[in-house]
Image (cartoon, rainbow, N blue to C red; front, top):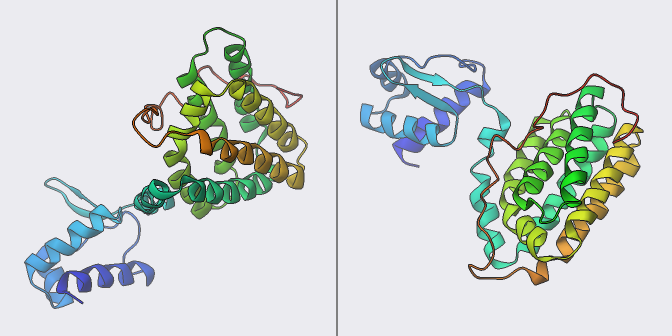
Length: 258
């Protein structure tokens, strides 16, 4: 192991042992280097590596702090693994996404709030209007798709699962948008499948929610053999847009249906 690796492992161990906690400021460079038995150069390289991993953040003129250690942020580097394997056969990525999100729907059915159900219903109401229009606003439909799935993931009660879902889902936008643009009836089917998932969640039926989500994502997987391998497919213009959320205020009402 290099001295940089020593720094990374030592600070990770300090976090695991509770010596450093989220929001804590690291000791001054000289003191920390001395305590770890490394040079200040090795310490800087280690801190830089920890910053890339999302474990620490440096504030100009103020020092270096432990982040809130959010699982989604810490799992973000997995995106490269997903991209790497998706280059060869994207079905592997979609299969893992299906496994993760089917379990997320099962967990969320028991935990999702009435407010979240209302938010999801509002999204479905908007998508219903869009699929009846000609031409469709395909990018907005993908934004709604992303937001709908994020609401479900957010109510699993499992931050690691949320982070994994985000790492995988963000890498499938290209295929989802291509399907929306080129597969006749795909947008209507997606909307109807989302409605079925919503109904299972609203009924607090965990097993039905899992099955509905699995069926929905199997349909997406079955479209992959038509996805082009070259630049004909669209890029990912909507994955990180802040507008991938309900575009109007949630109304205070029960969960009687979308």
